Image (cartoon, rainbow, N blue to C red; front, side, top):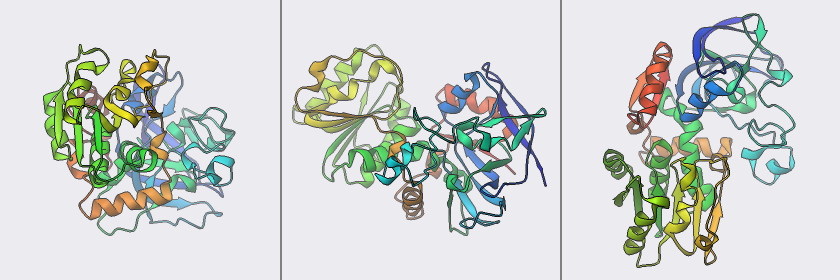
Length: 372
């Protein structure tokens, strides 16, 4: 039995429409989820210009509506968080523990063999009589989503806040995992966070949860630095947007860190010109983490690597969804991980344009679309 779903459809030319799509009954290895909430990030806005129509959204939480006959691990009525980097658990990378860069299912890793957007397995969503892709194979800005069970993490919580749960599956995971899984930040160490948007705030609170003794937040907006304090920053630096490579800010960091720089630095600005900036913030043999996923050519002064500095560029915080999502929910329920405080505003699907405007204007730490 098919389902009609009101959805945000990117047209590929920088615009979108709210329209109805039709979901086919789930095949043996598919699940239909009734979306309760979908987080928004800049990637969703970028998807407007990917040159083809698609159902938008890649963060979300909801309730399982129906399962295919071959699905046993998830059942109707289960509460779930959707995960866009779905591991196959059988490829080389998955067996190495790198589930976030699965060689078969990744929608972003070059050379992935399988379930990338447009794959034949994802023809069960129809718009205007033709199959339409779902962003990152899940398309959460929609009343219903047709997905593989590997895209779902079951949540046992009678009082689940779907808005809070929905933002775990990208920005929270990316920030938290970059600290815990990728950098493996050591308790008692110092960390610098460049950029205090949604991802940066999660880096800050992950560093705090991990026991960092000093967390220095750097941003060009004073209001974001005030927010950073609420999430665990111990020191703040108001940067000048004309400070090339944040060299002046790096000098202030060195003064705070006994003249040698911090143990860790995390770039969360998504500004290509600042791709090398975390290297200027760390001590010799420190670790610089490029969190925001800059994907273009930049020029780096190799002297920034002197001496023995490590520079890493993890994807999605090295996410292992079935391990990390329950841990994030445990931290949230215990009060250590702030999710409610991160959600600045909730929107209806019909107010998606306003949600984008607020995000692009820097008004929100995080915006969430909720479905009644």
